[in-house]
Length: 355
Image (cartoon, rainbow, N blue to C red):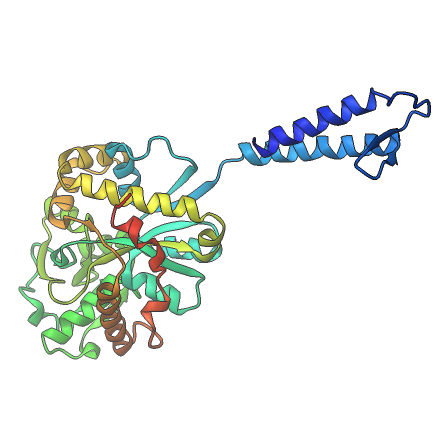
């Protein structure tokens, strides 16, 4: 019996009691329970009114669906769920919001405007370090070569060794800034011997094409778009420098109040991600229709990334911890972090795509 049906039975019982007298009882009172305490019609009517109110509240609660407010980058996860079939029969509602990069997603999570987002590992740590009430609950790993430093086709820059004295753009506190610093260090160039320009992907692309910056550190699908459509060249990438992990991040409030829905979404995204590895063409085609990005760009990006779901286990925590410590040394993160406290590993079974 459901709570609502139990309340309805109570209402019916009260109604029948009000219309029935005990034999020989001419007072209009009814007697219930073993002690035969008299309950007047006035009290019974009050109980009936309370039961009606409770029934209404229970019915409202039962029909009120949980809503997850999810931030997405370039429509990738929304498209992934839809085309893979894992968006069917959701026991909750998803309200999607699309963003060009991680920073505004994390700002929205911190402000309580989103429940779940999809962001790069270092961008997540930058906001977490500032005290945002968020945790990483799942994620994916991509090929590190899909993080790249780009230059214009006509640039005289041929390799990382040519970056000394140049103006380099990327996202502050995320993959862009980290890749620039790690690339300079690998090329034995002091960080202060190049100028960092903190720009988001849209502004950085415009600046590169206009020649107001010399190079741009970015990720897919921006890399594929720039190389295929703008004829930009890759002169360095993230191989051996970055974990290239993208986290599914949830607010502490969503974890506490919408846990079942968050867990289900992580599991569906992980299963859909595994499905996509064998259906990259369909995935790219559907995302192109959703976002109006060129299908060939998306197919190039997805093929290069080969993004696979991860379990947030001890090995992942250690790997991200090493990148975090390196970011602190670079000055990207303001302090040393304990990455194990920034993740909620209870969601990792779902992140593995298990049932």
